[in-house]
Image 1 (cartoon, rainbow, N blue to C red):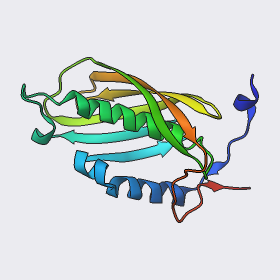
Image 2 (image 1 turned 90 degrees about the vertical axis):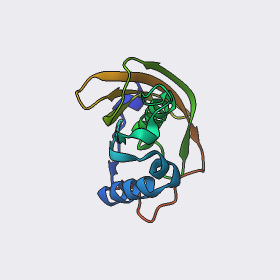
Image 3 (image 1 turned 135 degrees about the vertical axis):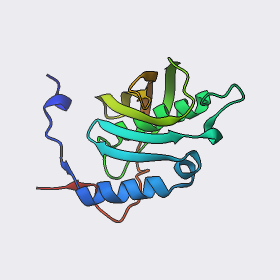
Image 4 (image 1 turned 60 degrees about the horizontal axis):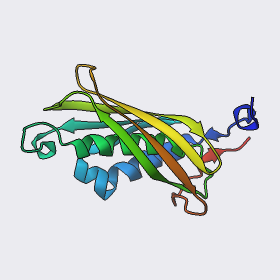
Length: 160
């Protein structure tokens, strides 16, 4: 086992998680897309979006960019808690596969951080529709941005 795998992780502050979810969900782009960060934990995040006519392309199905946004967002937040409080993240690579067309209904993007490193992380996301069908899958490489942390009022971690 590597040192990274044996390191004890600090407990996320529940108040930070609550504040983070509120800040993210009130931000301009998630509001515009009508998507929400539903949950976040170490190596996992869930994004939800209720597909509506504003998300459709001319063929009457959800635009691929909407699904790409969900994968990009779910992978980002899945890796986020592994980053130091003073640092940020940016997606530097996004690969995805569209598997089924979607017309309407709730879309759920489940993001999982597969590898968290000091400078790069790797994550995946799976999008399912209201019937539980896998409609898209993607992966992302994320780069740590030293000193570009998210300024929230609450501390990110509970220290023992």
